[in-house]
Structure formats: C-alpha cells, structure tokens
Length: 262
Image (cartoon, rainbow, N blue to C red; front, side):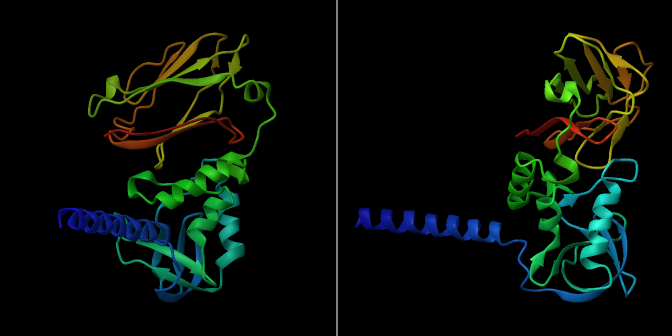
C-alpha cells in the first residue's frame, strides 16, 4: 500500500511538471486574443492600433533611438504587420499606460520572430524561458543586427572582457562594471556604449582603454579619471537578475553577461 501511494505521488508530481513545461513552451501561442488593425509602428517593440491603443510587446526589448539597430527593428515591424489585422493577447498595463501584449499574425508570434531574427533581446525579469532560448540560439548563430559578427581586430581577438560586475542595492558608489583589455594595444572607446536589459544607456567619451589595463564605469555620480567613469544614473543593475551588453559604435556586441542572483 505504501509503495502504491508513493508511485501515485511520483506520478502526480511528474504530471504537474509536464503540465508546467507545456504551459512554458506555449505561453506565446496564437490561439486566443482580440483582432486589431495596426495603424502605426512607434518603434521596434511598440505599436498603435486603429483604436488608438498602444501595445508594448511583452517579454522583449528592442534598441532605443540612440542605439544601433533601432531602425532595423522598426522597419521589420513595418514590413511584417503595419496596416494588417493582428491578434493581440494581453490586458496588463505598464507604467506608461500601454498594454503589454503578445502579437500574432497568421498564427505566428511576432514577439518570438523579433528574437529569432536577432532584432530584440528577451526581458529576464518577466521570466519567459522560451524567449531566453530563442535569444541564445540567435546569438549562437550570429543572427540579425544585434548579434552579427565584427571585423575589427579587437573583436576577432576577443580583447575586451568583463572583469567584474558589482551591484550593491542603493549604494550607487559601490556599483560598477569593470572591463579589461587583454590585448597588447590600446582600443579607442569613443562611441562604445554599455546598457542593461532595460533602457539604461551609457556612452563612453573620447577615451582609450590601454593595453593590459582596465576601465571601470560606476553607476553613480563622480568625476571621470583616466580609467574610471561615472554614469550618473544611480542604481542601474538589478539585484536579482539582469543582462549586460557592451557594444562598439557600430552596435557590434563585444561583451555579454547575464546573471540571476537568488
């Protein structure tokens, strides 16, 4: 009797796990929702319908206006869904009053397609594992504007590495990202930019990272030195999870790091 009860318990746990996996993989299905006509593409992850409602794609972020690849993501949506009827799932609103939605066209998830085409990155705080997998695949395959290869020597030789990422809650002066140049020549950082997985952007000034040396970017305020720079943003890096991207002025990804701190 005890063995039978144990077997039933194990079976129940397995079914619960299997059901969770199925839900995980189909959370961006295109089976339900409301149909809307897309009247305007605001940017790569925000659209407006003919009713005047603004829809923000849930689970992903595309580049902002100041970043490389902004136009590519926007033009992709213009080609794919502008002037077409799409299926939209979602009722939750963000802080700007936009609906956070899953957008589908002909039973295909546009949220996923942006990731598959290398035009967006997933937003880890919303915990959609299937989106993370799509980003990892696009990165591995060097797909699209966000993950394409560079031809600069410092890219090919993998010169710049993340030495340390320190985040300490509200202690802004103690929060920084440090990068090390492992090559035997200096690298001009003018126009390089650092960002988190949200919309925080830091553009390096006209400076160089010397051979076998480092630069450190503090989140808080301060006076720049030869190898220490200050973002002036206060808190940037989330304490629980985040992603770090360092790109050159062409938008080529040089350093990527993600973490989940339990």
